[in-house]
Length: 129
Image 1 (cartoon, helix red, strand yellow):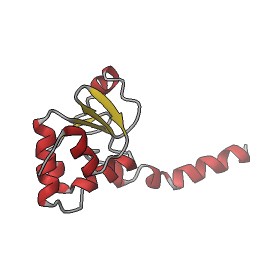
Image 2 (spheres, one colour):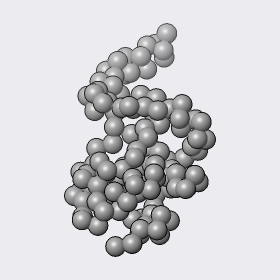
Image 3 (cartoon, one colour):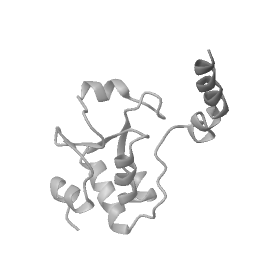
């Protein structure tokens, strides 16, 4: 009995760490880096071209990808949240699109998985300065 009680007590003691305040409120990627004029222009181009970024708020690669754009440019992107408990979740769309990894980019009907540089995204979509 003591063997069962100890893990329960430890779990109750540290439950606030597991269910901490950082998990309350909207579950979304928060971008903190500043955008450049070029990253904003590229983001607007991607939106105009119908490019979609499939993402999950808990995904470190998705956060890294978003930080490459910066907070101003990130607001310009078409972003679909795939996590069921994420803000404005569109999980069924992610399932229908057969999203297998994050971030994923839909460019010209093709799903491309992974973090992409702004240069790479520019090349994939025909962006020119």
